Image 1 (cartoon, rainbow, N blue to C red):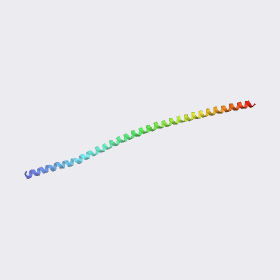
Image 2 (cartoon, rainbow, N blue to C red):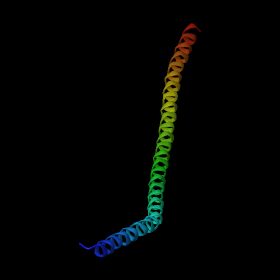
Image 3 (tube, rainbow, N blue to C red):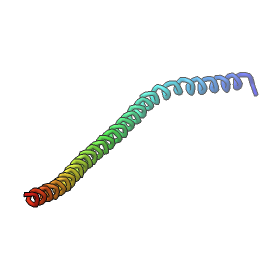
Image 4 (cartoon, rainbow, N blue to C red):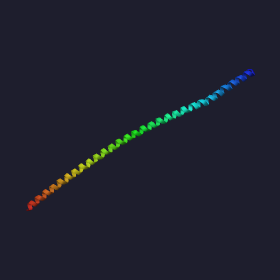
Length: 109
């Protein structure tokens, strides 16, 4: 190869590589906003998922609170029935004792 052709060839290679190097930073700058947008989209999705989880947990807590209230009411009813049963038993026992005492009193008179 002659010297001028070699110089032209080297000059073309230099121009091509410099163009490639100049364009690459431009592409990286263009890519930076898209990466930023992707991060924002990911953050929005994460926030949406977190919000859904929180809402779901709140619904579960409300259901559990309702169940606790229902169980407390059932417990109070059971205690009331137990007290009524005790009262009825006690009343029945006292009635029997009263009748026995009346009989003894009548018999003694």
